[in-house]
Image (cartoon, rainbow, N blue to C red; front, side, top):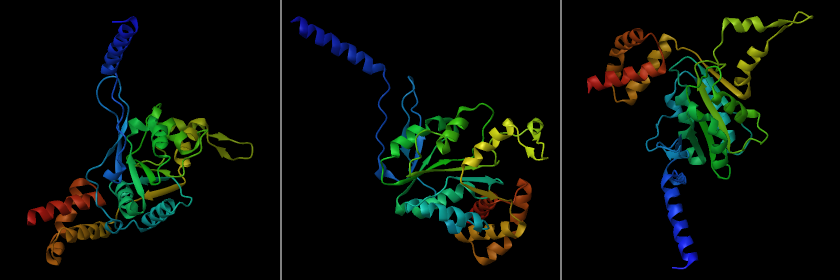
Length: 291
């Protein structure tokens, strides 16, 4: 064996050993497998590259299923329609009472506009630092992408806060025109607010009240969302109408729906909430027992 052949053999052996310990390359997204995806970190050693995983079973909730949030529904539907048509549109922050349809509204918008090229990528808070990678991955695609961050809130010093802030408006690179961020949260300012924050307010010479740096920082992220939608707890009659809608969708008769009123109120009382989520949970329980 010549010296060159010996060198090539040794080089191939070294490469084989290196490839054995390197993480595999992330799979290329298969855009034909669906219209909803999750951003996943590969498990295992060596911190494998993250990748997009198609969602096999997407919620089939429709806009018509969401009751008593008419203004919020109209605004986000219009914003999403502008987006899929290639017109200017805003990032959206949905905040307010739990169980009132914030996440469901985003899923319903996806189902409404998927046929027009809308796609959704769900990103966990822990992975928000990788937002630039996600945007770069889809920047050249013809589809329109909503990056969905559910139940978003941060504690002091979390890295995802800064990453999301930059992704919304603050990077040297322009926002991709085929990507929007839709986020839900139970609190509007996304960071915990404390009584001590009020001590940083300053009185100007003209009598105006000016927020200090701590307060400015805590409101700066939510201000970067162009559209704010606020959700409120439902009244009793609204809750019962939502229960009726879900019972009807599950095949209950008018008589059965009428008879369910007392049980529905007791169900809500036990849970301390008259929300759309509680109404859906009751409807499943009641219709299942009847069946």
